Image (cartoon, rainbow, N blue to C red; front, side, top):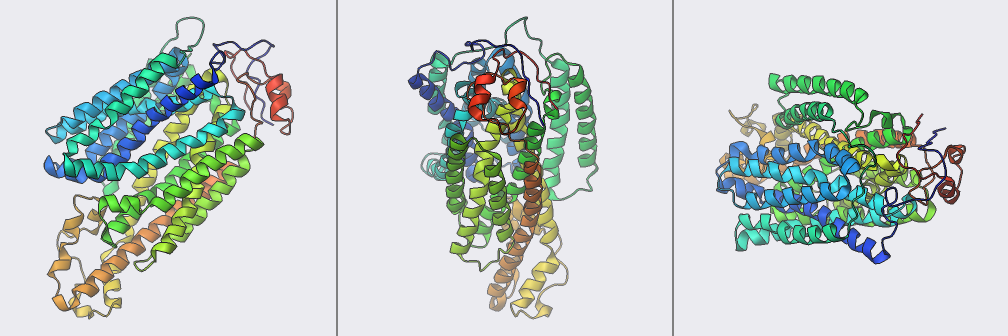
Length: 570
């Protein structure tokens, strides 16, 4: 049984340990609205920039540096997540969140002024420095304002925020680019960010750790950045499938060396960026593994379904985004519903397990994708998949925040965000690799011949320089399809049909990676120890952990309130 005696001794909660005390209900919801706006900033930026990026790259003549526009943002937003989370525990949520929003808006404005690819890459990196604070601190603020038993009612809204951003982003980005210019898409963030800044600055209390002046973990910060950056860069390079590149393995080796050094530094640090003792908590560590695997598995669907719609069905980038609305609908519905179920019942493990089943089944059905799959069939598969994704947005945050002491809530929440982002990155790299390994000339040739084209008309080997894998790069996709214009006119349609069939099979086979990952995520979720949700912010006492059947209400009443103790975890 997992004991969580965060502290000892009875008392009355004060503002330092329960930031919601003294705040009117209306004020709490005004802060919640501002926090949702802050998260909406980051979510909208991803959905509005992505579809327009090929146009931006074309205007700036930077096709060779296409991936670095994405990588710069990914690097800075990922490596700063745990740093922001820990600093918010030490210095308070408000200054860290305000700093993040200001940096994000600055990066947005500068990106809109970009006149070259290198300027855009640099300014997107600055934007990512701010984005690293938005998600983990926003989730931590919800943990500050609402007790674990209440949070389910509101955590589901975060899935809805992503859904709305996904709905608005592609269309808004296309409209602004067509009517004004692509520069305008970066300025959409400014009024939203300013409004969020005003409300947060005016209403959000700043609660910081009491006692002596906190010491920043410089050794941990440097070694963490030194570990994550080369690994993330290596994964970006590896997306072309060339795992034989010595730079990839050299960067991964360097990153691992720094990560090992980071662990040693954290074990000796008074205020570690990532408190290692939290991983002795079975619920916390199982959540990290499960969210990593779930996002690892889900990434393939997000990347390859738009590719399917664009290449096989001829949809535009914007249209392909809206073709994913069934997945979005399932995500929003299950995100909100799962949060409400947890809030009403106090049970989260069954909700997560059911979600993992839906996610696995949805991805499993997508392994049957073919060029002639009907829209109705694919929409049903996407809806089922979305039902599985929703609980990962809403519930894991509740689980993690409920399992750690209040004074480490920011660090724990940022760790969850970090594992989610790294899981997505690793999953995409592996999915790209599997896709390229599947989409071979032999598969393409076989599908063309199966359409009735004489084998003599189909070369046994690909033309020099031909790369089907370039289809994963929107800038290079047209080049990969040039060969279709060079075949005899009387069989060109059959060549196109064979090409679409081969592409669909390669995408479907890539989904098996997601199926395996989500099955493993289900296994990790089984290991979660379901701790009753606290009714207050007060840490629980040892007695309340003597039985896993203790009610959530009695757990809250029995908890102590001094939030500066360290958990004794097993």
